[in-house]
Image (tube, rainbow, N blue to C red):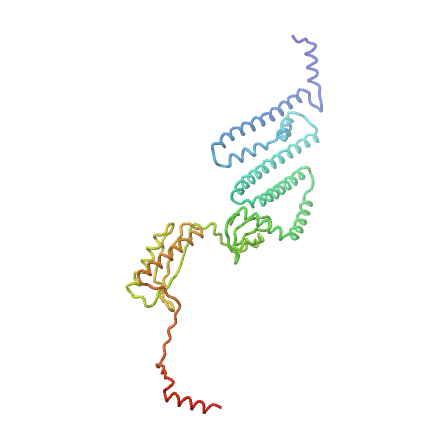
Length: 382
C-alpha cells in the first residue's frame, strides 16, 4: 500500500519544471520518441524478413534492391526526427526548437543519402557479378563508376546540408564550377577515355573474348580499362586502343555473328557443251545442301568472263565458327572437283588466244629465195 507521503512526493517531482516543461511532459515526449524508434526498428525487421522470403522465390532484382535499401536504415538517424515529433508536446525555446528541427532535417538527408548509396552499391555489385562471367575487364570501370557516383551524391547532399545550416553555398557552387571547368580542361583526354570506358561497360558493344575488327586491325579483346582497350591480334602482338578513339571508329564484332553468309565464284571452260553447262548450277546445289549446318541460297551462271563461264554460289553457315566454315568450304570444293572430273567438265584458268591476219611462211635454209634475201640484207648493211 502506497503511503500518502510517497504519493505526494511523486506528484511534486512530476510537477517539477525543466526548461518550462514539467517532468511529466518530458517523460511523455521521451516515451513517444522511443515508441517511434521501436516502431521503425520493428518495421525494418518485418520488411527485411518478408521481402527476403519473397526474394528467394523470384528471379527479379527489385525485391533484392529493396532489401538492400531497408537494411541501410539507421535507428540513430530515425531518433532525431522522432525527437522532433515528440517535442511538439513541449514548449521549448526558439533556438532549441530550431536546432532540433535542423538536426532532424540533416538526419533525413543523411538517411536519404544512405538509401541512394545502397541502391548504387547494389547495382554495382550485380553488374560486377555479370561482368565476372562476361567481361572481367569491366570490373575496374565499374569500381570507378561507383566512386564517381558516390562522390557526386554526397557532394550534392553536403551542399543541401550546408544550405539548411544557413551557410550561403552560392559562392561555393560558383567556385566549384570554375574549378571544375579548369580541371576538366586540364584532364579532358583522360576524362574522355574514362567516360568512353563507362559507355563500353554500360552499352556493351563488345566484351572480353569478342573478336573485333577496327579499321585495318583485328584481334580478340583481352582487357577493357579506364583509358585503353587491349586486343590480341592474330599475329600474336597486343594492340592498344584509346577508349575514346575506339568508340569513334567503325568496328565489326564477329563474336556476335549468328550466321555467316558465304559467296564464292568459279569459272568453267568456254569449250564446255551447253548440255553440261545447264546442269552445273543444280549439281553445285546438291553438293552444298549435302553439307551439315548449311542453308543453301542460290547458284547461278552469273556472267561471261575473259576466259570462262563464271558461276556464283551463295549459302549460309548456321554456325558462325570460322574453322567450321573453312572445313565446309573445303568439303564443297573437293566434291565439286570430283563431280566435274566425272562429268568431263573443266575448271577455267587464265588463257589468251592470238588471231593472225595472214599465215606465216616458214622457209628452210635451202630455199633459194631466202638465201637471196639474206645476201641482199648483208650487202645493204654498213
